[in-house]
Length: 193
Image 1 (cartoon, rainbow, N blue to C red):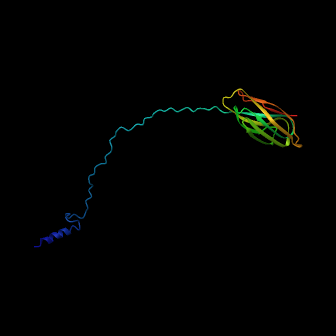
Image 2 (tube, rainbow, N blue to C red):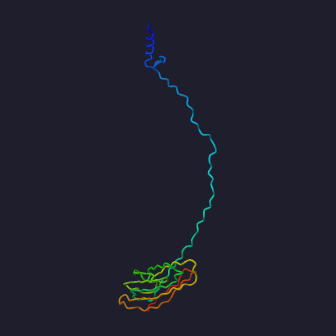
């Protein structure tokens, strides 16, 4: 008897159900497997940030620099085509001289330089000729810190020429001064003869 043949037929009825599946109708078992949950960390004390107080330094305020303007005055100018002078000042008390045109010099050309400490040369040329009295130039100085007393301001080496004839014009001068306590100087003066 060939009983093995009958058993083979039963296996074939499973239709490729995978050798010994028991003859169910070909379904795959997809039952989920048991999994362990993802562990979560236990709640513990959280770190705290410690704020250390610090002192903020107060800004130091430097005293504002003091500047003065010294007008160079002329009197009785009559057709002055050019004027040059050296202003003498105390370099221990004043610094950074800068020269600008005065009201009397209008559109004149002006130049300046420092031939040495405490000396400022300035030259002014006006082809139309300067007439009248008033400030021909303004010299601006920075006053050094902690200065006091009176500072003389004098004019030297003054040369002036007529705008048309180029003849020398005679001059006299009056010195000026600056007191460290106030910011208004007494201007040096050039008087034309």
